[in-house]
Image 1: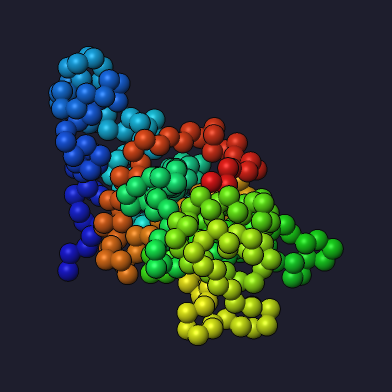
Image 2: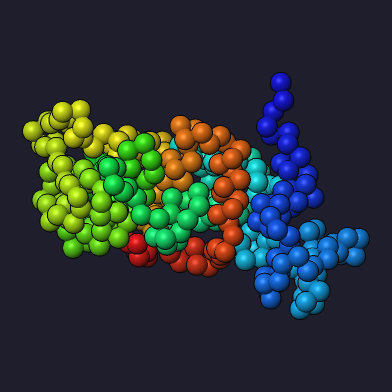
Length: 320
C-alpha cells in the first residue's frame, strides 16, 4: 500500500517548490515585480535560496513565495504542503497544538501557519471565481438556506457569569456551496445587505420564522419558512433548513471538539476554513489531494503578517 504522505512534494524541498510553481505558474514563471511571464532564469548552484529566479526584464530576483501567504516565511515549502494537506483532509480541522507536535518549531509558528492557510482558503470578494466559493449563491430554480448560530462558551456551571457568544450567519446552497460570516448582531439591518449581495435574486430563499428574515425574503423569487419554535422542521419535504443545520453541526463540532477556544477576532477565518472544505468536499468529487491543490491556488495574491494577525484578535472584520 502506497501512502499519500510519501509523495515527493511532501518530503523533498525542491520537489515541493516545483509542485507549487506548477500550480501557481501554469504558463511559466511570473515576475511579481514587473508581471512579465516566462522571461526568468532559475538560479541553480549560485545561491542558497531554493527556488530563486531572476527576471531578464527587470533584473530582479524572486521566488514563488512572493505575493502569496508563503511570503517571508522560514518554514520549508514541503512542510507548508504537509500542513495544508492535514488541514484539508481533516473534516473538523487540526489544532495548533497538533501542528506544533507534528512539525516542531515554536507554538507561535504553528499558530501563524494555520492562520495563513485559512487565509488561503478565504473568499476575498463576492465576485471571486474558482474553487473558493466565489460568485453569488443560488440562481433560478435553486434554493439557498440562511440561518445563524452562536459560537461561545456555555453558561452551565458558571455561576453569576454568562460567557459572550458571537453570531455567525451561513448561506448554504442545497447540494452546493456555503458561505459564512461573523456578524456583530442578528438584525435585519445587519443581515440584509449580506444576503442580498451574496444570493442571486432569482433564488428561492429558505429560512426559519425569525422576524429578521421577513423583509429580506421579499428581495428574492420566493421565501419559505419553517416554524422551529413549534417544532416544525420539515414541511412537504421541501421547506426546511436542515442543510444549513447539518453544516453547523460539523462547524461547531470542529470549534468545540478540536479548537476548543476560538478568539472572536479570528472566528471569520475558522468559518472560512469550514466553508472551504464543504465547498470542496468528496460529495462533489473532490478528494483530499485535489482539495490541497485548490488551497495552494488560493494562496496566490494574499498576504498575512504576524503583526496583523496578532492585532486582529479582538477586532471585528467587515461582514462582507
